Length: 196
Picture (cartoon, rainbow, N blue to C red):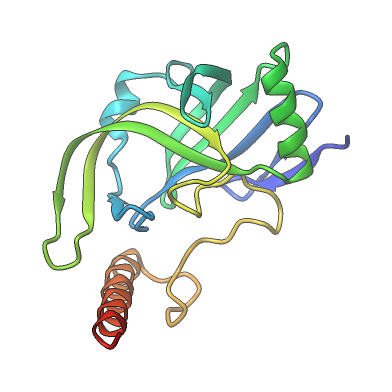
């Protein structure tokens, strides 16, 4: 299969390459609520990444500790989220399967395995803000809890944003709008439930 280019966080192209199993993506996005109501704060990973190098964070399949499938070669925070680069260990049959699925575009989810060290819950919205995270592993998954956490490819990755905001809103506006959007959605659901 031919290699495919993917945009890196610094605007340069990276390669999603089935031949050598390398890929890149975002394992987490800052200030974007996931499906469980967790919101990762900017800088939440910094202490963990200072203690643990990229290869020390395990690459698993579907968060299964019996399914290590490769190594992370780079993990860093940027303005968007937790940017990662990794390499599948193609001597493993599971990694070869993932290599084919990623190369075909059939599998692209990423998900973090972590322990919350510091955070708080907004009583009004129910969202839990994670201010410090101990990162243990990053998995390749079918359905990520944070839908925008994905392996990236040219023309495929878009930053989640509120539809009424400009394309690149200031970080404080985007954070506020994500919370407002969830509050509005919760109000609509409550209203619909009350009218049943």
